[in-house]
Image 1 (tube, rainbow, N blue to C red):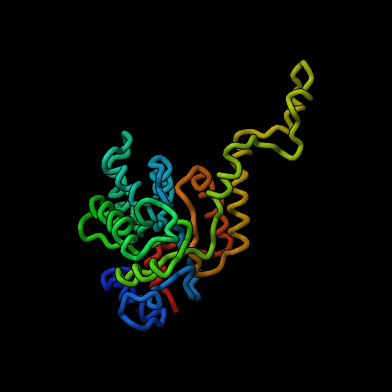
Image 2: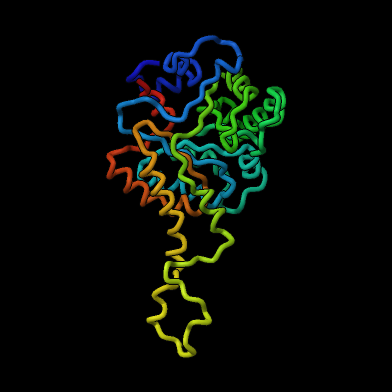
Length: 283
């Protein structure tokens, strides 16, 4: 694949074949050495890729997809195959045909395997039989028999020789990330903890008669929700550079962070593009 190729040409030619020349890979076999691992793309273009993993929540997945669609921004989504299967077989009311709807918004899809298990001890054949093929089956049921993912993202970013061999046999790159927004880590950290502001006062310290001046140190729901948005923005500021692949998850904090992170990207003159387009810009 040469610099300047259009996204449409890139997809038509198949991601796996064209990427081989971009990343100076040798060999056509299914060996671990022929696997392609991508965290960022070397490019002078001020573009980045926003990716969203898991997609367990139909509610947040659809709303995130719509928010970006309204802004004419296309995402790369990595749903766990079981999340796709759940939507096909027992969707919540209003979320039927979720994946074709997301595709029609212009978003594209990679493969996040099927069960989201830790795969460190899986053999190549076990990965194929228990993870890759069931995930592809679910995605093709949802998106059509000709569907081909833009890449494979292993759960938790675990890369093994067996996984490399499997990705090479499917001629698909392993897509990791150069910037982790930490949205899921932050959510897990705070989900079971009360929100405390710097001047948080305990209930016992309040006078018997309510005094609005005492509310100064009490966190509102909006302030509590903002904690993870601040974490996400801090990670953007620390790790952002052109060609970065950015990791998010389809959860509440990621939805809330959309406008702040897009404002941040604009301030850095960075444009979000889908992964296939970012890969086509590799120099």
